[in-house]
Length: 378
Image (cartoon, helix red, strand yellow):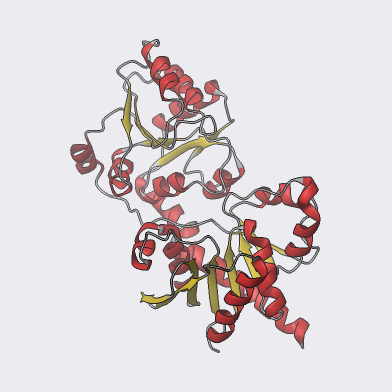
């Protein structure tokens, strides 16, 4: 039996100042999700909204860049995408982002036999007064995918999905990072500590760095060798973080603000760390946690749906309630005293979160909606 041919469509237009090959280099998740699905034997084509027409083939995957300039309505864009999807004879459409429901609906109007799955990327339901057309658009979907089932609740509580829409729990992506020598990574990065704790994320209220600092301050009383290293991009709370560190003797000299670090260098930081800490209050997945697990680092992260899904009851990490510094401190101390080896953490990643694992989950989802659509059409 021939492999299913799945088209993954990114409705968000690529920046006009980037050539298509640059888009593939900079938009890592576009390539990663495609290669994850292809790793399970699925034939994958990618369709990318763009300002030019071009076809690039990489690692057996065709990347179709589609010029949508001048196509101002979802109906017109849908017709253009549907024309290409028909030409390449796609069996299933995997669309990125629930925010493009109208575009997906327009494609469904042109290709009613094509099952469509939309994947969540930190999407939010529309405001209540706009929901009526969205219910009609979402009704055209065969399935929706979230990292964790709980993330679908804002949509289901609003009655946005149809009764026959399948819900799939699949990690948003995977990571190419790997386990390395901790000693070598510490020599290269300068990181140290017992334990050596790493933070990677923006310094904003949603990531809650102040609660993390409070927890580290408490934990340091029991683990005086603890050192916290913070890599971050945008930092609206930087001033408050600096002030919090400066006024606390338990934090001064223990917290190291690294600032912006190139993504290629994050792998070295992860390999150097004993623990990875996050204070996030909400995530659609948690790419930094994925990367930590890929590097064999023990996560000490907030008890939110996406992080629970990534850890999956594996016992390789610790969860703590959002904003609860005392619970974070206990988790850090417990993790420092007894943590799995990097190989054990990586084994969990390989089994549940690797490209192969994510690819298998997507292959099962594609097969399910395709078989159901064929049954309904016969």
